[in-house]
Length: 104
Image (cartoon, rainbow, N blue to C red; front, side, top):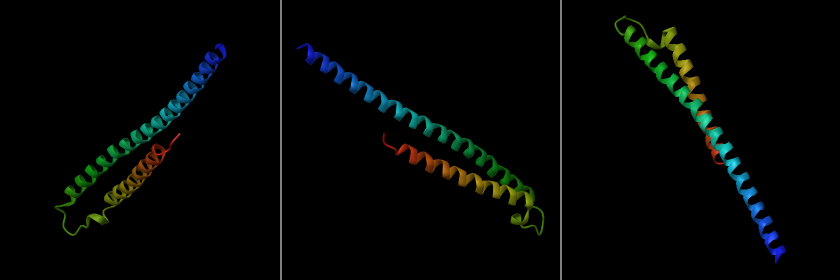
């Protein structure tokens, strides 16, 4: 009888260790996803600021005759930075999805 109790305790301890390992690994994954999404939000905020800057620059140029807004150096630079940010945001979200889909 003592052997059965000892065996049951060992089995219970093994299960507890397995569950604690599983939970710890899942928490690590979720923390990584949260960090990636935080960086993504930071880039989204920067993206909104760039869009505002582009709009303000276009508004400043609206009364000037013969100026193509796409030929303006400031707007081209802002659009280039905007494209880079959108690629980075997309990459971070994809990476977060891949990490989140991992099963332990």
